[in-house]
Length: 353
Image (tube, rainbow, N blue to C red):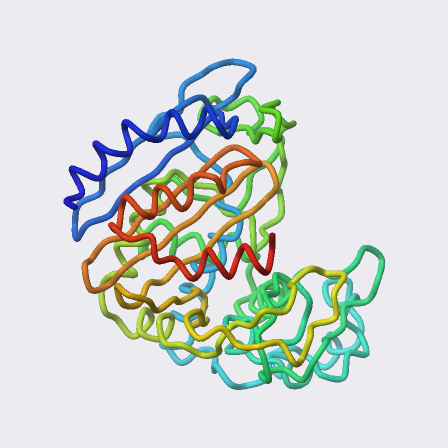
């Protein structure tokens, strides 16, 4: 199916899917080589009925992770950071035991082993997020298995801020705006942005608009705000061979069937998934149409998904301002890539529900 035909199909199908799933607004962008095909449906805010446009900014949630990983791996390929050197060695000794930024992981014996490779492949041993009020601890020896972890990205961000002597949102800005051509993208928003008419509001399952969500501090794992077209520019970079993209798309570890919830101690006997693995920053899947890279995003009232197929030079990003947004992922992916073989989605369903 051509991209033009895929867009025509989506134009017909998506509005009905949105109505059924109570989804207020969607913005997508399909990439094919040097072309970007954007499309929007619905409204920014159900309370105002302002339409979504190509300039509408959404929370990209965990689609933040591959962008941050790309910036980190630029440091690696430039020789400023080593993939396999323990991150703690980049910290002065005064910060290795007690500091407001690192206090919640004090006295974690495995901290001295965790590397950049571990964080970007989700093998540092941390849970996804620490329990409120509890110290962060590893659940297994770093590098021995997969367990999806936002906390790992948080730790890497804090180490890098010390390494580059800058706040992360300042350090990453040239990568966003220059290297990746993501002009309409930022890892922070403040309450001063609450009145902007180009930022989508999230919505709950009933379609009610949520309050504005300030993210004044960057969270490498979740705080990217961008348009679909901006993220599509990043996907174009991912479709081109380079030292960084090669690192990102090289499998590091197979995922497994253990539950990734923060209340579960990972099951060390969980079976590895034969079709889904993780590179450095991206999930990878192999199936009847070869290898895809992918990442999902879930910030509650915002959902997102991105996937790419290097061989066909095709990729798509889906940004949704609804808690029900994942209802659109499979139909849009199926139409874009002309396949319903998505072991990554099957794994997500089993693991995260």
